[in-house]
Image (cartoon, rainbow over all chains, first blue to last red; front, top):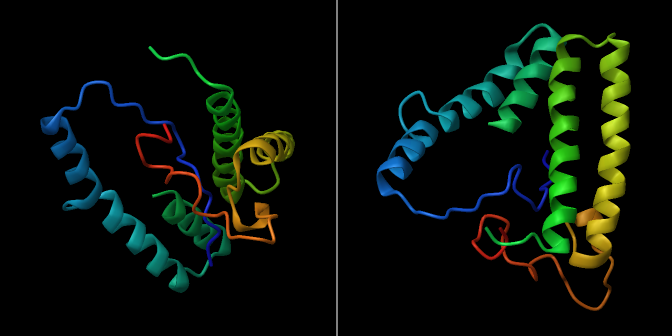
Length: 65
Length: 87
């Protein structure tokens, strides 16, 4: 279950929009081997993790991602 | 560079304290008996709570628990945190 914290983790102030860099960033996030895919793997695979420290890490990192 | 408003400053304090809380929680997941990490976590948790209280009293809710108005639902009053206005 989640609590939504209505803030960004870091502030974002774009002074000079750069579509080329934006493309790289969004690919890192949503593309192959991206953070988004990783987050879903962690959040799914934690259920079959036998060690609770590790399921804790998978949960917390999955949340972070 | 634009000067930081009071709202920016208070939000930044929340963000800094919250990051320290989350990062130390990740460490404690792996080293649950580390006393220094536990003290660090507790310290930043308290700082975060203070920072949240101050921010929320002036600028609106950060979580559902902060919603105090009984007349209207204030959750969506502020611009979304990812928007240009909110940063």
